[in-house]
Length: 405
Image (cartoon, rainbow, N blue to C red; front, side, top):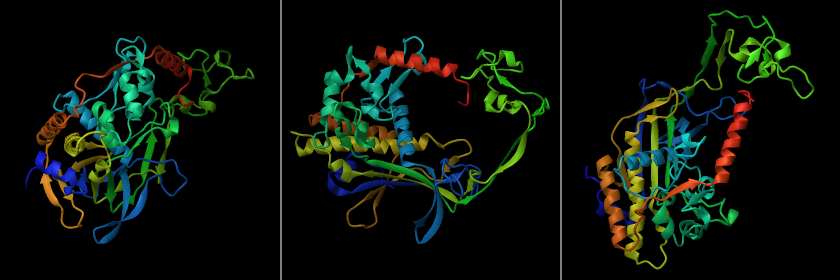
């Protein structure tokens, strides 16, 4: 199988294909028919999973959502971040640096690939670039004015926002802020899903009985609980507060837990799982770079597409440990299909970590030569004093609140 080259990718972006598609077959770590645990949703239904019938090939099967589009986008961003931190991928990654800020330096740095709303996130809005609030800086103003009809500045400073989408709803224009369509879409579903049951219990080695005493919340949070009503925290009416609201030893994690069966979130058995990732080249072609030649626009779009290809390749090597008891094993290396307009059999090409990194490098160099370079200097913001103070006050409140409230 041929490997994806910069020439093939450029031709596809220029109009030779409508989309790039990667379909990965995966199996539970314990083999075919193994049990995995999907994400749960708080709904009043037979179970807490997203189960539905889907057409797979020539048959209709019961499927379960194992990883949503939004979650997959986050994982793809973290895969790109890993490549950037390893200095294998070179592209602009603005970040807010909390290091050196007392009480909150444990946050380290939060990059555009980790912020929920990417460069339009409130974390960036409430930080300083060169001592100026981000939105009032030259870069911030350029980002605010960026539009799908003129995406040059967003491409220059945060090209991944063009890949994963961004809505500038917290900017100066509120809901009228610019919207960039998500071009990269991926999800993982389990096939032939059968919802199971989960059992749970706990034997307390101390054998503390639930009716042994009333347990109160201690007035001193460091003490956690007390049996002495005089030492208890009081509610607004001056009454001693029972620990956890019930005052049972189990509220402070002592005592037995009776055996139980959970039929709403007991995991599912599946024959296999499929990850389907689609990079819409049609969406990229709607991005315009005002005043630039067609050659430059194609080069810029190709650079964004190369980042999408890298997300697939680096995501494969990041493994698919989605959550506790949901480890999936790929059955083959990533293969990319170039989907044409005629609905015929797509051309297939291979890609790996090394070739994806080379694509990003070559595509960004071509864009720079065409007059639309990526920003090479680090874009480092510092949290504004008011954001630091908000964080400190929030943490003080959290430290005072009993667990579970």
